[in-house]
Amino acid sequence: KMQLTEDLQILDSKDSYRLLSDEQRSHLEYCAHKLQRKHRLLAVVMKRQANIQYLHRVHLGDFYWLNCVLISKQTLRNLVRQESYKQRAVSFFYLGFSLARLLNLPNGTTFINSVCQLFEEWEYYFSGSAVQSVKYVLSRNSTSNYPQTLNINNRSSLQLLTTNEPINTSKSFRPPSLSRFNNTIVYEVLQCPHLSQSLDYLQVLLSLCEVLTQLYSKLSHPDSYTNKSLYDAIVKLDLRIKHHFINLVSKELTELSFRIMRRDLLDVRGSRSTINNNNESVNTNSTVTYFTNPAFNLDTIDKSDNY
Image (spheres, one colour):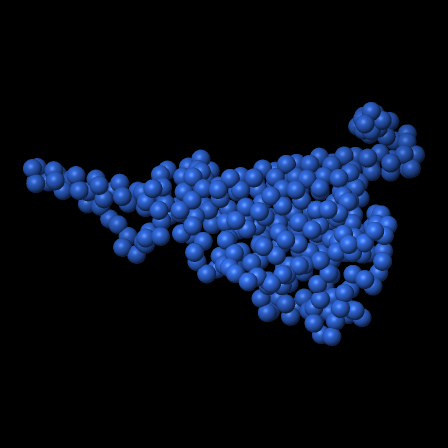
């Protein structure tokens, strides 16, 4: 660290920089970019872990969303009774179940390769027919139903977890891609076990939050910012997690909070209207009119919520 600090101080001096050879300049620029990637990556890891832990706490129930609206556990239960949440529970369960197996992999390239491959396969599995058609065309042919067994240098997490052979320590990043065998997409990392009964969405989401927190802890490995291609892969992976999980859940909680606030404001207006109507019988000169939206339905919201 002392040597890197001295190198950066030299880099700040334009006169000294001009006196350096091309090799020294390249080394200093590499160190500067590496340090920049490290700071950005650590900031992202801390931010995402805080986001995920906050969502975890909110879904435990009886917690104020953004310190504004109290969301009770019964309100969350009423919300997730919708049919769309049943399918999402299966999606989150497959993702969390597959990610949990990968957490036992060593930090670095092997782990990030497997996680990126998992998200590629998971997105295909739960995407619409149009997106699946495009991804199918872009997939590569495989001569085996288990594509991870074709190249021992790029073995998947399943092999690394079930064999005692030496693990590949290559620093190269392998971009994720789908494989097809006999005109059917085959999965290298994604695990899709049979589910004999429906899943509890809240319990699945809480478990996924714990797995994602551990995932981000493993992303702060030195290889993650030393290798630029690996760093770029982590940035794209973070965008996927943010899009499919953090933004999705946060948006729904915000919409739920707005509905709770509207309901409480309507209740306050209704109570004030009743008081004013009673006063009108005494004083006919005071006239107050309040408007409500008859199309607004809050039957599924728990009346115990406060803001």
